[in-house]
Amino acid sequence: MLYNFDEVIDRRDTGSVKWHYSDETIPLWVADMDFKAATPILNAIEQVTQHGILGYTKPTEALYDAIIGWHGSRYDLSLEKQNILFSPGVVPSLALMMNVFTEVGDAVLVNDPIYAPFMTKVEQNGRTLVTSALKEVEGQYRLDLVDIEAKIAQHEVKLYLLCNPHNPGGRVWTTEELEAVLTLCKKYNVTIVSDEIHQDLTLSGHIFTPLLTLATGYEHHVVSLTSMTKTFNIAGIKGSLIFAKDNELLKKISQQQHLNDEYELNLFAYAAMRSAYEQGGAWLAQALAYIEANIDVTVRFLEEHLPDIKVMRPEASYLIWLDCSAYAEDDKVLYDTLRAAKIELNAGISYGEEGHLKMRLNVACPTALLLEGLKRIDTALSDVSKNP
Image 1 (spheres, rainbow, N blue to C red):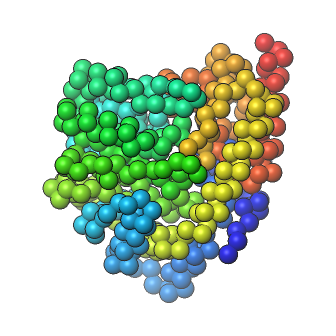
Image 2: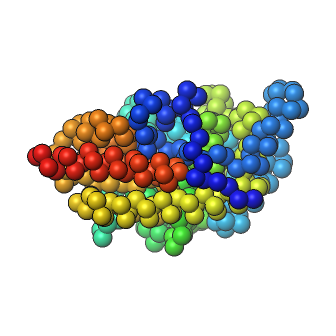
Image 3: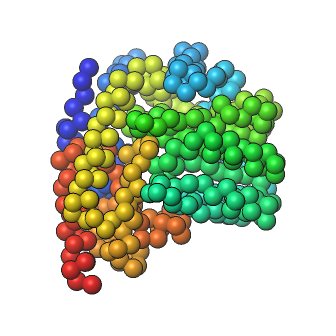
């Protein structure tokens, strides 16, 4: 079936995090989409309610088969049932990994900029945060392997939290980059946890490589995290996956999950996950085409109206990283200027020091809404440039 992504759906007064601002504000920030979920997913949830009994539920063999089939056919990632654990979300899983692989005070490495919970979960769990700044080369981020090795050696890093595809920059790390990271981590006996939640949103011309497909011989130090919730715009239905190939590693993770009582999902999440992985491909293909068109719209608009904004075109996801340093010298002033124009973006500084004077823009919405938001950005920043 064909989906109508141009449909504007009123999300105000629904408890939506994204839309909790004033009626006049256009929210192009938090990473969910303003698109209806795929019909098979909605039908699966409805079938659960129609059954009428909402009792305790465990994952079925059909669900495991759906997960294994999706990742095998799309990414050549060979999984078996025993390689899969369930978690309420990727962020809770990040916190979980602190307790599995490190002790209080141990050093944990993340890149900068990075999705904020990578930093906050390290610090909230009493670990020592170590950052390695990404390098910008020809408008895209690159891993600074020299700096990564230096930081690992200097701080005796125990755990490296990798984000692939990268949030907020949208890079899909290449096989060569991932192999280089693995080589460094093997050299220093560092465990790698790879957040791969944006994997299914990889855009045309780019190839996502699961870290586990490259980890032969180092499986006892590699864990991948992912979720159908980002892919299929069902973040309100909590649920994610933990993959590992080493049995002892999985046992340690599972034991910690049971200590935290964070090892199972609710019946709606199981139903949605199975439906997504079995029948969600058509919706996803159409959504990605629409998102790519919106990225094109955004790039063209900014090139024409705000050419001094440096746009980092994403290789994955619907988030665009904007360097607005030509229009402001202070992060709060930049954020407040845009907010005064009734447009809500993510402040780049929340992603680390390398996010200074940057903003993150979400284009996963009807094109008409996106264009109105872009016009507000143009008005706000043009006024700034006229009144230095």
